[in-house]
Amino acid sequence: MYRVSVSRTFVAQHYLTVPDPGPEGELHSHTFTVEATFHGPELNEFGYLVDIDRVSDGMDITADFFRDQLLNDLPEFEGLNPSAEHLARLFASRVLEHVSPATATELEISVQEDDVATVGYRTGL
Image (cartoon, rainbow, N blue to C red):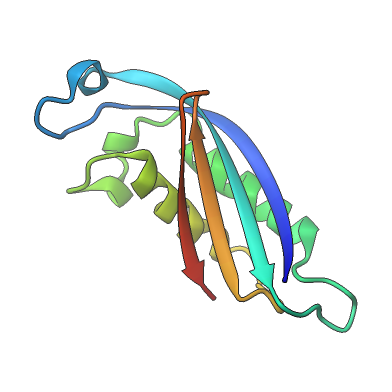
């Protein structure tokens, strides 16, 4: 199985909307490091799993969309607690708008929230 990963870092704000969120219920910022990893069993005719330049461009566009935003105010988070888990799924969706998966069969997004925790989302392609 092959894999290709590209990561980006950005700052965004949120506040959690769950019952008894503690200090996370107050408006605060996080430095998010997001890594997109494409997986697949075969390479294309050029020896690529995915085009790394396109993945990099897609990561730039997607990170710029979330950068310096209050996640709670984005339509994508309407009705959702703006957790890192939801951010991972939404990030994956946006990256895939800009990247042709070539022979990749799976995309995994890892979101590291500051230096505290890492969450992930995996989807088939």
